[in-house]
Image: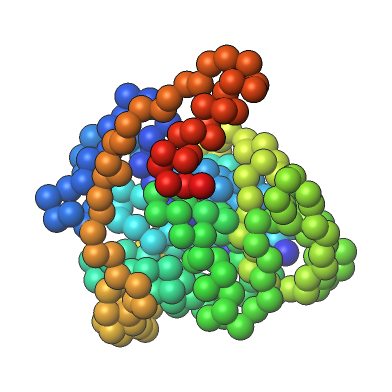
Length: 265
């Protein structure tokens, strides 16, 4: 079973002291003081791909859209069990929305023979949650989103569990080839071993620029996007919360008075 897993390098904002500042353009975030890690949901996608490979054989190819700095994320995925990697890198990719990003990914993997394409369900930096779904549409493949469990039923059929609201798990069957966007919590991502890290340093990362993808400039970046970032803004800090004290009857009366004064009832 051959699997393509798409990974993204994102700023590590887990440190509570990390401050996020809008850059001088007003259309991005100053990343000069950030450290970077693999996107959380993508980490679970890598683990799911490797688990399937270990059980059913095949190869796992790691794919990334990013600069050379993203090699650290790619190498770590290779160290965990990935077999090869593709990095799509061109300055003209900047400003791509989810549809344009999916188009770039499709161009990068179009010559690969794969049974499953996996992405994380959501990127922690932009929060679109749309790249995997758009990729499935462009590839003309069936897809499932927010997948937590994957079971191989036959050579061309999977049983997957999708997380719904309230922790419910919806069980579905899907034929391969297909695209799955992986939800966090379905497995336990492993740590890379020292041996794996050494071996990963020897594995090739194929780099593809715009000409190598076969795409034109009007298919990527802002020119190839249906949504363009206009401006970031920091939410304004409003009044602090008011704590209502007293027994339930008293607090209910106070709350009703506040809502009435604010014109909400």
